[in-house]
Length: 355
Picture 1 (cartoon, rainbow, N blue to C red):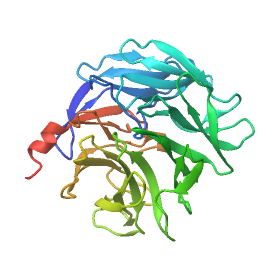
Picture 2 (picture 1 turned 120 degrees about the horizontal axis):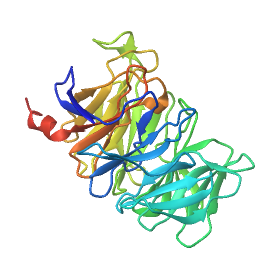
Picture 3 (picture 1 turned 135 degrees about the vertical axis):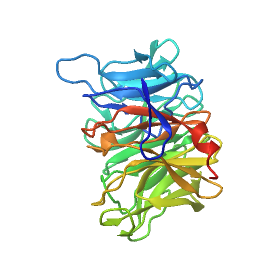
Picture 4 (picture 1 turned 180 degrees about the vertical axis):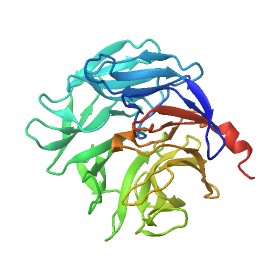
């Protein structure tokens, strides 16, 4: 672990990994830190001839790295409250991981012959949910309740992804129609008890909605709405404005909480006072990539850390808060565009926020 001063913002950043392999933080739609915020988790790419891939744990203060799972496990995510992780081995075996001891306990099996299309998610009831590609090539939503067999609760011809069960309401599962770009109607909410799917944010023509995430308490979601391109000073060509929209749990009310240049992946602090997002070069526009912090009360957005340019979507910054909300974890693409994990302590940022 090394500390350095960001050459643009002047803030101290800690870097915990070095390539040539990809070391990418967990996706921003799940917890990335242990319950006490002492550790965060990231995925190490396994290169040919090596046996060190899988999920790893980093000590925030010392930088000490500990392997949690090997390459045979996928879909790792941590519980919103408990110090437990969830992961899948050999595509279908679901395990709970004690994040203090790294002890793994099998808790069930997903339908045979299929595979998850994202990471696992869990509600406070212990119910696990995921989007899934069944053996017959139909896409599905699958739930696994404690002590029960996995159940396919929804099937679709659409490619389903980004499934996220509401952290405090195991009856609601958010998911998307994945097109790897714009979609006619991307965001959906599924009611498990009623077996009913409905649009979450109802899209109008020419709207581009993307990258959604629950708040930790399940009361609202953040999503990105991209505006048509327009000229912006300091960027090459035309840029897209990223509007962070916050919607209530039921998808009945939405507000634009922040607007800034080339934003993509949003996240909400647990106290709901702060937002963060990555600033990324995309859709033909090149900008200084990095991490943006946003004060929700004022909508003020500030670039707090700069990064290299992403080689692939897996190398995106995907910033997210720790549980206390005083630190942001992000992936920082190196000179080759490959993600390496970094943190920035927000105390230093907030001290001069009004300057």
